[in-house]
Image 1: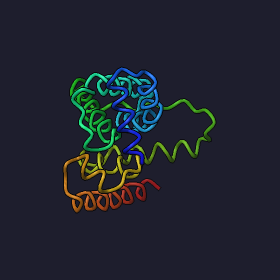
Image 2: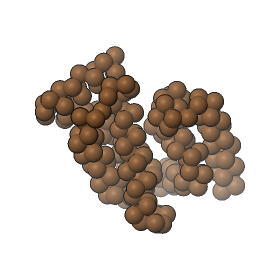
Image 3: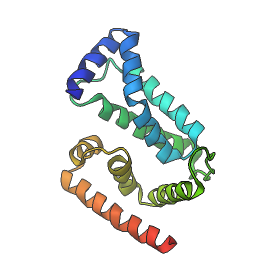
Image 4: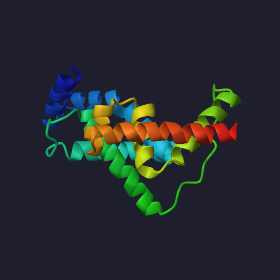
Amino acid sequence: MEHTNDFFLVRRARDGDEEACEKLVKKYYPSIYQYCLLHISDRYEAQDLTQEVFTSFFANLSRYREYGKAKNYLYTIAANTTKNYYKKKKDFPVEKIPESGQKNSEEMSGRLEIEQAVRNLPEEIRETAILFFFQELKQKEIANLLHISLSLVKYRIGRARELLKEELEVED
């Protein structure tokens, strides 16, 4: 059903329907922003990258083929956008302490520990872990998105669990 809905939204957006464009952005912005934030860890940079992802998505709609979900195409663009961001920076980002709003310090500290542990994973395992644990994609979707076998996705998720468990236990 989601795929069918995306199919019509993309077709309408391709035809210049601004309402369809807006619906696609509203539907996927939170997921793409979260994905970028997990890679970049700077809210403002993540917002900029998310905007870049959607700008690229709409600019390239004429080349988009409805083989898969629009969500997978957006994640592909987001992955390329974050990789290009690091190529430009040529260094790993300095961690910034997020503004504490409604969250208490223990909850914030726990989330920061988990996010840092994920950033410490090897790149290919980190990418799979973010898509599975944070973006909640199915293993088959991850395999299609990353163009790898389902068994490799399962291995990487298992390996990510082991490495995260080790790192988070050491810090306790």
